[in-house]
Image (cartoon, rainbow, N blue to C red; front, side, top):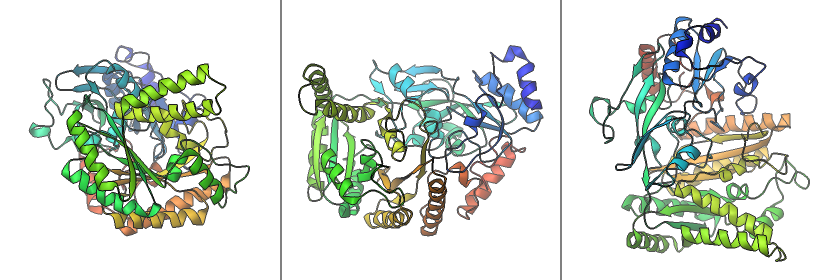
Length: 529
């Protein structure tokens, strides 16, 4: 606790009301990962409001050899939230550093701090010619936090790590560096060009400012909705999408979800009629899918370009997928008009059968479509409540605080149909053995890389189920490694990493870490062996 007292009581001119909390405040929340049984004790939580304060905190912690665990907003859901891999850290929560420092309306970029959220930046850009690349994580999540974990979105700039530059970072001893010089932003150039990504998925520095590239608002905004006719055609879809991505017809990052992934957005596990040890009744699930018009696999993405270009792309996509899927191309303005009409009928013609439920469904779909327009929403987080016993969940607050139990597995796979099918088969086998429902999203990040996000939802009020979920995830992680499906993202309950993969990379990272952070002051155990 000595370093906390030093930070709290000295150099008040360098600190603007900085607050160090005790265990009677938010420590339990900060030390909870939301990953089954993983929990780590921490020393305290500090909320800096500027990079100057971060410098002072780090230099003081460095002198006292106290490890610091930095988080942007602490919403790294499914991978550990703000919980450290090791005990004895002070959490450095930077959500109060939420300034949009600069906006370039000509080249389309912004400079932001770690606390800037998707919702905040989306609102800032609302009346401009630019929008953000959105993820499905919701409006309250940090943009910098997602980028540094190599997260991806939906737009042509969805492979986010390729579209940012670090303008300020702070090392373990408090020293300040910049990897992007002032002036008009033209991308990563000069001697720092290859250094930026070293600070992603790493623990060698604290990034306090980045320059982020924005997505232009084009005159034509079309939504491509794809419904595969059969579970068995997912491999053919992947091969077709590889072709469409390679030729440039599809330049966004198309996501496709299986029936359980889509079902979780509109429904929950029926604990009254279903056995949580064996899963839902097949007949009930099929009935729900028919009622909600959910197909075995469903994809939605934007088609970008001016009107003639976008329409030509849509025609090509329809032709390529017509044998395996029903393809619908709808303008975003159509969804907006439909939403307005549904709202009117709900308010003025409540006597119409099922009008309220119809309006609710249209609202959910409209919100989901808004993500492609740079408007983040919590609708995608509804799936986290699949095995939550609360029948009326609040998706406007932290799902882990709401008692949701979920793991996210993230194997990186080649964009080859048979490889995807093999991974799905291996995964489904383990889910079926344990009695869980396999919810999957597949994203064509490039024409070569398919990123799978596999969700396992469990009831946190049931210890045996929680333990089984943890064991199932552990088995699958090992199987993925055996098959060579390298995870694109790791959870804190896996760290420090000891599964024997990527040893050369870990060795090189260790050399860099020792050179830059010799005391291992920043996030010990994170992305290291």
